[in-house]
Amino acid sequence: MGSFSIWHWLIVLILIGLPLVFVLRAATGANRFGEMPPSMNFGEAVSSFFRNYVNFSGRASRSEFWYSYLFIFIAGVVLVIVDAIVKNEIVSSIWNLAILLPTLAMTARRLHDINRSGWHQLLAGLVPIGPIALIIWYCKKSDDTVTLTEIERVFR
Image (cartoon, rainbow, N blue to C red):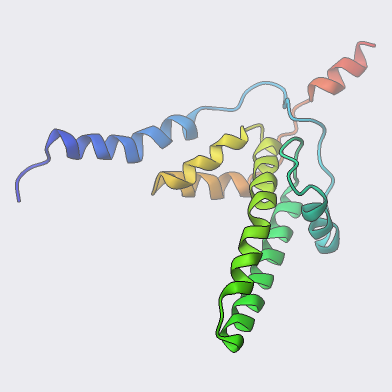
């Protein structure tokens, strides 16, 4: 084994440096993604998850996001058990395809709630920094800055 070559350093730079550029950049200014979302209980969150099936605009509260993921996890466990009993993986595969777009949309709306772009979901592929940053952002409190629509209402 020799020392680190330029290619090794390039890989380290891409895996750690590139995500840090996006993670450390502060989200500044008024939240441009709409009004504050309401807090939701489990039923409301699941209903909102399916009602906003491919709605990538707007914002999703922490409660909507985490309750929806709890529902996805519980349904996934149940479907894996059903697949094990039936000895077929078709049911859970169909479920995973059915929830792919609404999960991406809900995650984008959750990032909008903290004044980040939905494209930041792509950081999940840049291990180890990206997934850690995303989990921290998912847990972050909503951005309480005044939205542009509220400013416009004041001046009308």
